[in-house]
Image (tube, rainbow, N blue to C red; front, side, top):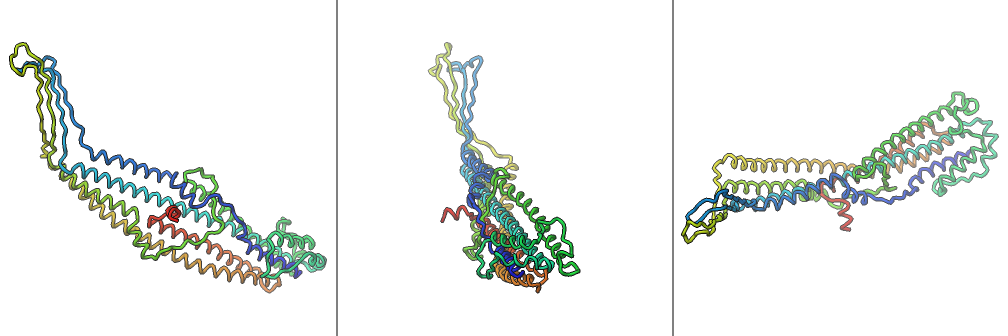
Length: 488
């Protein structure tokens, strides 16, 4: 009896300490997923194509208007003193006022730079979404593993309950087989695998004739299973089965969430939703390598949204200068060429000689409402840009404080739950031994077990929150894991 209880207790310890022994092969990595997102994400490609299109506007804005060519042919030649005029051709090139083309080119160039910063911001946002979703997937999978481990521990506790509340007669009949093949190990010397511990437990149960919850579909009768008349043993078995059912339901819910998160993750990478996504077996905390003040200054100096607004501001200033000069006259230089045929009636020395006439033209911008409205438009856009810079800066500061709060809180929780988990594990081991000797009730054992596994899950959540907050701060500072890998 005591040997069987000690063996089952050791099996629980083995389950707890062998939780992280499974090593998952990871042909992919988070860095590789980020590279795929940079090359395949449709939002990133859209912004990059928009940037390339904006570059094509620079030569358009800095080019002179197309020259104008007019050709007229006389159906009946016009008689002149120097001959008969057959046709007339005019070529005219208009030149905007000095600085108009330069300012127009500067505006388009600055707008192209703003488009590039928008592309960078979109890329950084996709990187952050990929990392955040990957950490969420890691947490869900760890939650599933912890729940499955909890079920295994509950199965061992169920065997303890079966042995503890077994009828005295059955215990006496199986006492000989309980001692055979059983070797008790101390808590600090547990090096055997989970399978060997469970196999030894199964040999004892087979020798004792004890049915488990997997072997029986109906609960045992009180007269054959419990030693007390109030059915406490049967109640403990029911409670364990209730806990197991809730855990199985939670696992089913988590697996549904896992499929949803995997589909969302693959959408960021623009690939089929059913493609497997690999996560690490163990996630290490990703800490900051600079103080918080430097982070805030880096956000103000490096964030692409603020840079985009700065480029837009310079572009609006260039537009204002361009509009002001557009209100000045445009000058045109041209040439008029007249085709003259010889006339038999003319005796002039110019008879039959073509005529060439240089020409100068000038526009008269007398309708000032149009130009005044264009100037006002440029001024209002510049003011709106200043307001946009202030609003974006405030929004980034709010995100900075929220990310820092999440980072500091995650750091605190990692340290707290690591210590809490170690203490709760020790308490659970003691409570389990006390339960095997009938000095502790099942309620206390289940409560401490739930507390232990909750601390383990909260510790994992704290690590994922820390890494998510670090990714958030990197997104605000325009730093990506790909850049860090290239630097290293």
